[in-house]
Structures are given as C-alpha cells and as structure tokens.
Length: 223
Ligand code: GRF
Image (cartoon, rainbow, N blue to C red; front, side):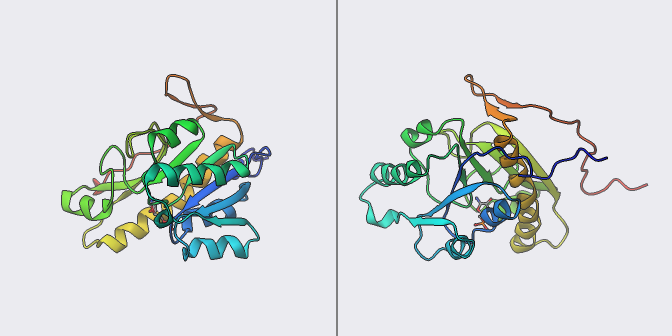
C-alpha cells in the first residue's frame, strides 16, 4: 500500500490567504491541490485570477494600490483585509507589489512567495530574459519564506528545468511555470501539515524531507 500523500490531502484545518495581481495560475494550482484557501486578495481590480477565485465560490477582495497615497498605507489596508480572515499562512502568487518591512515582519514565518528563477540568481523582474541573456543551462523556480530583502528570504524548495537551444522567453517561462504549479502546492501542503516552519534564527525546518533521487545536467552528458 502506498503511503505517499498528495498535496492537501491531509491538510489540517489551516487557513490560507492568497495575494495575486494577475493571471492567477499558481493560485489555481493551490486550489486544484485541495489546499484550504480562505480568501484571495488582488491589488489589480481586473485580475484574471479574481474570476477564477469567484467561480470557485471563494471570498475575494480588491485593494487597489492606486487608491493609496503610499506603500505604508496600502500595506496597512492589505493587512486589515487579510486579518479579517485570520490566515495561518499568506501566499504570494504573482503578487507584483513590493511589501514593506513592517508588513513582512508582521507575517514572518507565515508568508511564502514563489519566484521564477533559481534564487539567489535573478532576483527581481524579467528573470527569463536575464537567464537567456546570461546563457545559463539550467533555470527554474524557488519557493521561499519572505524576508524584507527582495526575493532574498530563506529558500524552501526549488525546481530546475533545462534551458533548450532555441528557447524564447515565452517557451522558457512556460517550462518553468509548469514546475511552479508542482512545487508551490507541495510546499504549501507541507506548511499546512505542520512539517514546514521557519525557526527563530531564520532557518527553514522541513520535517520528513526525503533524499534527492536524481541530478539534472544540462545539456545531457550523453554516452
Ligand atoms: C509566476 O511566474 C510567479 O513565479 C511570479 O509571477 C508569475 C505569476 O503567475 N511571481 P500566475 O499569476 O501565478 O499565473
């Protein structure tokens, strides 16, 4: 009998809040994995992800950054919205605003992000273009706890993909996104199962981590 668990299948009743700005495909992957998303908040009124969340009957809200005079006021409003739902975990899923240190510190240890590169390589935007320009052979994505340093928080999980001859930004982004949709639900499920935490000295603690099974070499070494 298999003892392998799918993401979310044994999730304790944790409450997740998801922050988005656009397409919402990572949010959708969390929902597809059966994870306990209580609310979705977007800073962009017309974000496609809001339609997906509404169609699934989730509580959604919009906090438009353009309605707020500065970052501190916007962050305070987001925190107010979040706290109405008493989240155990706040998941950034394509949320395209930099959050203030005060906000990050308020949710330390329960704030996760996914970034489309193998951090610490390529923090910030345009990661796929910069990976192609840099000539890297392996690219990927990173799930990390959020710290005040932009894309600099403690790393939870990474997925790597090869960069192929003829790749464009779009083809490479699509290959990475496919892995984002696998690794993010898994990491969030670990948190919900009580296996993933951040220690007081800022280290990632993952209980029951299994041994790596392979190695990705790109291009393949061949015979
Ligand atoms: C993803 O590539 C994510 O890593 C990055 O923004 C993109 C969001 O895509 N932070 P989606 O909105 O989840 O489809």
